[in-house]
Image (cartoon, rainbow, N blue to C red; front, side, top):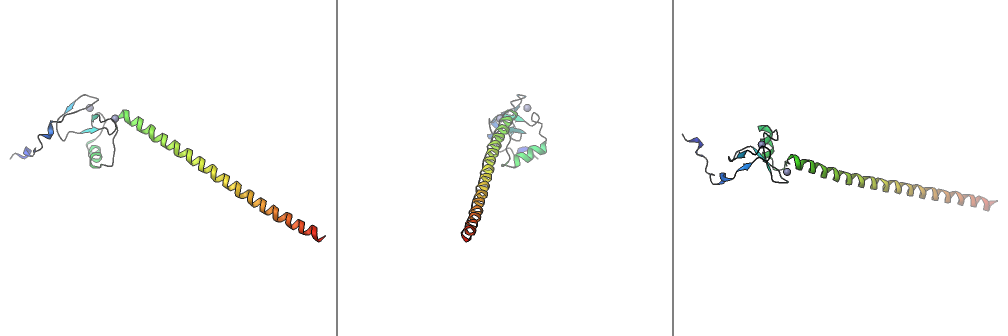
Length: 127
Ligand SMILES: [Zn+2]
Ligand SMILES: [Zn+2]
């Protein structure tokens, strides 16, 4: 039985993937090759040291992204920069909170001082 005859997508198979690292060409539709989502370069699973299971896991989930070595470093840097901005914002808001607390504390002091002097004054008036 020609079980292999399920290659009805023969016309689509003309696309060849070339691994950027080992320059090996992959013509099969089911070739285990990864496409970087940033630079669109292709890498075979052997070069990126992916196991079949890892490859299947990654390709089965469209929400997972893969970046090649070169892009990975850039992406990580970008994430770090984002984090830095986030931290800066946190520091800013933290300072703002402290400032608000000081302001409130000062207000408390002022009001209690005012009340004290008022009481004092009242006592003075009595005398
Ligand atoms: Zn390769
Ligand atoms: Zn890339």
